Image 1 (cartoon, helix red, strand yellow):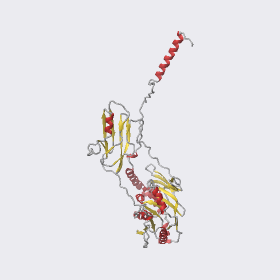
Image 2 (cartoon, rainbow, N blue to C red):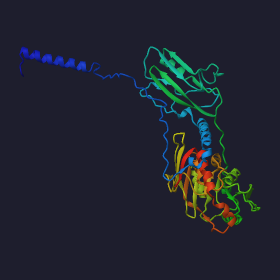
Image 3 (cartoon, helix red, strand yellow):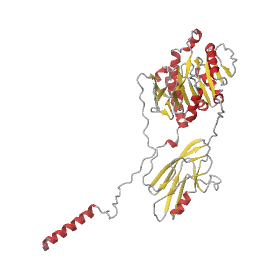
Image 4 (spheres, rainbow, N blue to C red):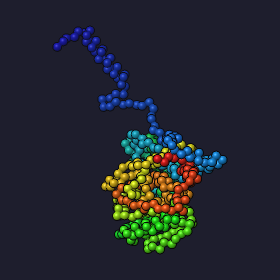
Length: 473
């Protein structure tokens, strides 16, 4: 073992003492258990910060919809469109669209999803509590914008007159504070069927914001499916000066389905009376158009589903309505399921960007684009639009409707209006035939639209759909 003289020992001791003091100077908050780091400034996550929408980019070879508006009327139409769009935003936007951030390491407990109240009904706010803090006293604050806050169970609350936008609770006991928080009620004092509110919940430097959904529940509308396809499905079509083709369609239908009701919307200039059993003919003023007839036909459907067919289609042994019903019943989220016409499914996707809210959005119809397959039905895929042969939920389609302004130049436009509202699928295992094209000079004069029809449709997209451009791929 080495021996040290007095001088060497003093040097060693000095080094040890200096090292220890240096360490303590470098880490003044160090303890044997933990290292305490004190931030210079508390970081507060932002709330409600969303980048303003950017103008969208029009696909190549798109129609410039503003250019379809006559120059003399353009400024006036743009002004009216802007005012109408603001009203649309006010009607469809919600405070619940606000971007919220969950605070980290917060002692505040609160509901983050699923808390829904009815208008005018005092409702306990579930889950409010304060945790993991030890203080000599406790003070929390709750603040709302649209409703009022009260203390007391709903059965004790006689009115909202004593309610406040801000409620401050202060106690000496954490247990007592949490009992009070469990008794906080929220009430919307005015009647509104679909809105929301944000609650600001704070304690010391901790703050959380959580949403309250305000909804008036609506009664369900259920359809009795019965036991036969005739109780489940109504067939709908529109005819115009093609009675020969319509009669062939009816004969082919009756070959496979004798009792299914067929609804015919007829806007022929010289109507012929259809006297077939289980055929309901609704005669319209002449030349009202494609979508007006569709809307009329669907409005008369009383079954859960309707099957749309053109008046020159042909039922075959592959036209299994039950197979389409099976897909719809197995997938309740679906609203429309299309088949194929002589092997052609004609499905498509719709790419849509909202744009900056001033110039309008951009829309692109892309053919032959499908998304994921349906569970248990690999022959079916989710799409945005399908061919003219499809089964649909009656109530869902009535909410979107076929715009009667579109007379001849229309099909994809229904699915464009229904984008974000209708879940659509295309299935290849159910098909319908098509009759051979015959000579019909009178019908042909109306069948193919001219430039004016296309120009009108573009103008309608510009105003109604708030688009700056559209591309039909």
